[in-house]
Image 1 (cartoon, rainbow over the protein chains, first blue to last red):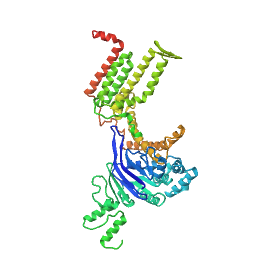
Image 2: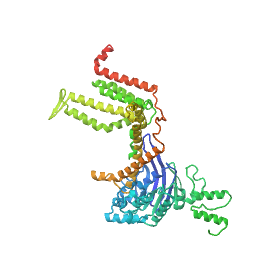
Image 3: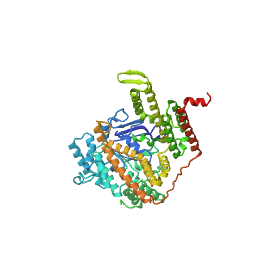
Length: 286
Length: 276
């Protein structure tokens, strides 16, 4: 088991007038190799939950295990934990700080004990992996790059040390449609490389439907659903009180069904939707 | 975590003190500070102490929050008291050892200094505990209005102050986020010597400055887009208003000052007036 969370509860500013319960009694486990999406409206506790997974927030009650590391132990080995669990925050480009791209990408590998040469090699591989031209960008200041390029550099900074688990907090926020697609296919590409397990927070249901195998739904700090996207989006009223919406493909399928046409599946991608419609119309395979 | 530090320490509660007009509170605090400095005899601290305890009770602020503010100055209090105890040589010598002479005058003076510091800090802390930073700025702006006559940019100063205050929690949140992000990348902030620790802050400070400048740019644009400062006379959403509460509080403050002055000048004489 890559991640095991049991009865996790956390409260911000406990014992003050500003006290705020963020997550309540959450339990789940994630197997190595899974791609898991976490969805929920603003303030539902998604970010708090993932920050627990690499020890940035210590559990208040309940237990968390990441591989063999027990995060509720008195002094877990944070360095080893964080080298196994890579975390990409929202708008990661705002965390760049070094004067050259190469130095910035080598920052984490250096922290995790790579020597200068190993770190430089790891950084080079990562920069190439995210699709940037190493020779052009390596000596540039990260602040000179465009928004999309900056985000790639930030991603390179995390994957350079080859974490086993990659956690992403809204990796596509603020990018244009082309940029979103590039980042998403990059993440898929990473999975075929060294990174085994991917956990991503997203507000974009279309992305969740298309790219994840399993979805955790949070509402007001509680885990309200843990299903495959197909199961989850098949239920028209799944998100009745959560402020979330179905992906467009499921919506269109529902609308067509309301008109009386019988589309059996819950399509998750545009191609699937087209296939289903063509199949209903009696065509062959689109 | 920075999140646990509540800036300006405002403690929300529904009390007489909370509801006072911020201008009145600013004046009262000034009057209170004056009263504390007017004190000449140790006995004069009695009315001040009574007044302060009453104010704390009325404000419904838990004692714990008030004592927390004292923790910050504990060192200064002890340090000044110790200096006075050991090196003030007024009055009769009580203990004499090597160059150190502890005298009753020194002890008394140390006690007075410590009392003065503690009373000053508690009094001023009550202001920030019961008034939001925004209200304090509003109050200051209103009190500084007369300075407009000499072309002092009162409103601009008030705007600068409120923007600064407003952005402190935002930037603290930002610091929190950046620290988390760099920790996730393996940065260690709590190990190594002083220089190593200072260097470890660079990955936090640089993104923080970049983001502060970006926010300042955006804010300036937003102000421009709304034609800020195009109207010569700005109105307020929440007008400050004096109420009868402020009058009641003013009466108490005046009584405090009178009491301090009376006790100062003739402690025994005061009792004589009462016919003792």
